[in-house]
Amino acid sequence: MPQQARGKNNDATENIAHQLTRIADAMQPTGMQVTEEDALAAWGLRIYEEEFLTAVEKLGVEIV
Image (tube, rainbow, N blue to C red):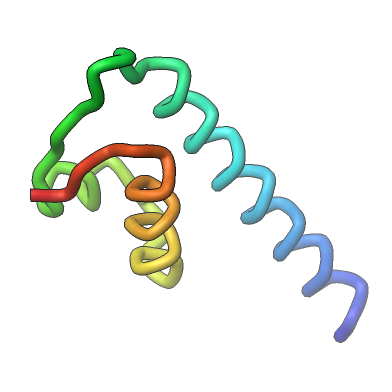
């Protein structure tokens, strides 16, 4: 993989990690529900939608 592509992947991964950290920090101990539409509206990286939704669910956020 070319160096430039690796850099873009690292940037995307860091952005995903940052967004997931923000979500985890905002969660209440009792859990949280969000619609898939709202979750995806808050997420700008279309190519990573499924990975994002899976990660959100692993953090305990229920997608309804």
